[in-house]
Image 1 (tube, rainbow, N blue to C red):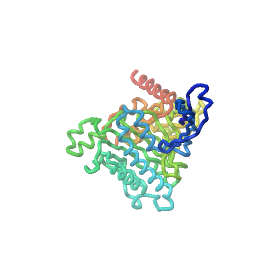
Image 2: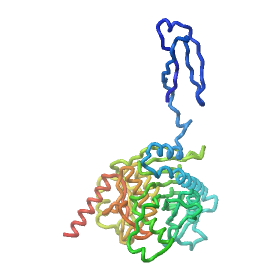
Image 3: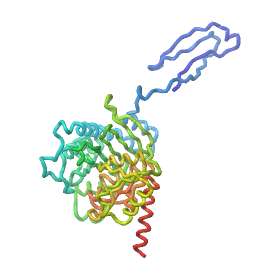
Image 4: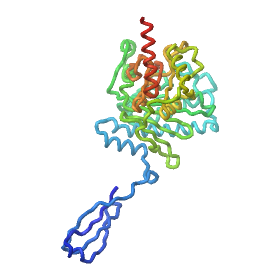
Length: 402
């Protein structure tokens, strides 16, 4: 930031002329200048001013998106992200409030007292259903959303033509909801696709038609087509971490002003770390590669940290490094986490932060869904640790061929 002072430029004799001070107003600022004699020339000189404090002018999420759009004209989708993120951040504020008040608002426990089951056969918590409605309604009225696909619903849903746009949202409205009653961190995971990028695998075209085909066709895209993804963690603070494909940025909800404020720009996951995060109760059911890796990690003095809420485990891994995984096992041979709603959005975020996201054998972002609720093994984290696991799988697969 600079201010401007005007000084007379003239001869030495002119410099001895009497000086009078005046001021002029430009917009909201007041600029002082000095005039000497009528024969002197006015010269404008830049003078430094103090930088604006973040307490006085915080970088809110909305301001950040506007500035990113101006600085990255090649990322055309950023122009539409202001509306979409306004909807998402509003939903996250509401869900965060509901989570914080769950115990005193009778929002803990199962929906309808039990018996309400989602498409995966899982019993739904009250907040699962409520959070899903909050996020769907917020996105619907953004004016940019064409299709929405939720972990809590059977199939993708087309947005009413009145409010329809060109983007597809995939989301898990309340990840870790089984921990709500225990007060453990939970979160919302989301990803945004451009409707113009379409990919439908298998023989789905022969099985469905009309509007359902359109929604399926647009939704079942590989994670490499994502234009935005992120998560909002509801914990000691409410933290929104996201990427538009040009780095990862973290925002914290300032409850005094009701806005998400930029707290970390260009967040990077450490290249290595001393933490491994897996549900070790499944150890006997893991394949030999994961069993060998965990044994090696223990021998190298790694710490075991597992919360059981994916958003919280992912956030810790981004901050401190190491690895987090939910691999396949004898009980879940195809993995447990959903590709569209959890794996792909988190993988996009991890790669943008400098890490690796894999099934162990394949890059997550390259996997083309064969079902909207397809499950997949997931291993993410610091480059050095995840690359070690990938190489272990390569060696293991080689021995199987031999």
